[in-house]
Image (tube, rainbow, N blue to C red; front, side, top):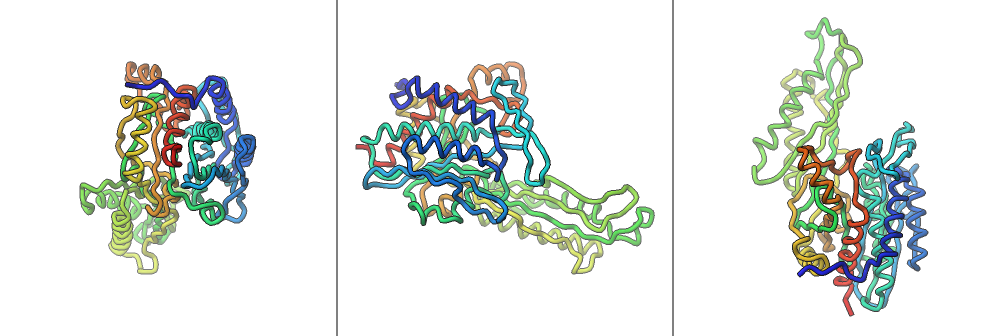
Length: 427
């Protein structure tokens, strides 16, 4: 039988959390520039009597300050559990019409002024973490060990916050956890529900830049040139055969050419074209197979176009983030706890997705049992209205994505707290 939401979240606490969520939603900050958000989270965690470190982390770009927050609550001898939330927003103009909708404009990494919105639910994640932090402090008599909270910047960025925080020595300076967990809002599920995926849950993502070089010249004399635009078109089409004709069809994989940059005039054949490519899969062996195939196809098509060896297309791996692998035993324990708190009918097994998350880095290549869980975040009546009209429900990163914060937190805080109590040794 489904239990009503337990004592972890009282009405007063829930009202405070909703106000915090709305304040965070109205004041988003882009990746690498979360100074105010980081300070806000640090101050709230200090008020809960956690030992807090601010601006923790080190990016590869020395010009950026990492606004990571690490909060520690030690409660005697016992295991250590890391709970992560992310806090950066997206360069997107909000179209929700909410009274607390973002009106923020701020400079991006290139200095361009852009609109900013929390369209991936990181404001929800931060609020959920604060609710859990408060509840775990209140329930200290029921657990033993160390709770390690990480408020991570730049999950959406290229020089990611997880890498920066680990690079700065998170586990060396604080503690190496026995388990790592995180929660992510789900845009296609009702608030008050939880979902889990054992094993591979989110994809390994690799960003690749292909520089297609040619011999430029006048558009009226193509016979005197080596056209990199034509060669780029051939490469783009050839890349689509890697997944369909070279990989085992039982291995999920995606190759996407997301951007093409080349040429400035209609009557000029350019010297080069840049292709921005994303490769997604779950297994490292599949990733290596795809990268090798991309390099081979680019080189051979360049030779077929008559390019000299030194002018063949160049393939550069720009960024790679490993797949999220949810430890099956940790997921089993979590699903049981979620069912006890919310009722088993509110807890379901979901399917893996090809999206990516730098959360995977905290597990140190499966050395530490870790898991990311999905929490339904949309009002049920909103889902029903979209289904009835035949419209597609706004997904993550959509400018009209609306979170039902009250009911999501009302379920999420007790569910997450129950899991932490399970992992930190209930007394």
